[in-house]
Amino acid sequence: MTNTERETPLHTAMTPLPFLKKAEAEIRARLRKYPPLYALVGGVGIVLFWRGIWYGADYFYALFVPGADGIALGWPSAADGLVSIVIGSALLLSTGLFVSELAGGETILREEKKEEQVVKKESSELPGIEQEIRRIEDELKEIHNDIHHDPKDGSTAHGA
View (cartoon, rainbow, N blue to C red):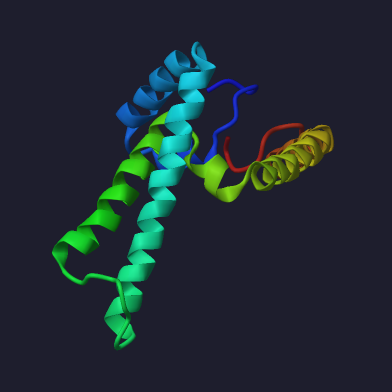
């Protein structure tokens, strides 16, 4: 990854799965050529994801609140919400929209700005640190020479 590229939270989360990063990049590249299709896939992913969350909340409500009307309990009802979450998440992850849509673009941009400020600050400190390292190296050389050099006869100490 070059200095101009930045790792997104999704890339960080998918580091152990490099094939997923590659698949996401390919899908995004293809969908970018067709913005309406990209928007449709992303929109369907968002709706399915939140539909699954909604159904899951309804299911748990029915489990824990006695007499909850209109909510069917059982495997089909639980699976409905779960399948929606899985399909919605897959669509959002494959298009690179999962984090940006669920965390919000402003949150991500704000975090990237903070990160850039830290990088700029650290970069501006590097010349001073390098200069300090050179000064310490020079001092160590002088100490080494003082220890291993006999000033009386000009020979080195310790039989060296």
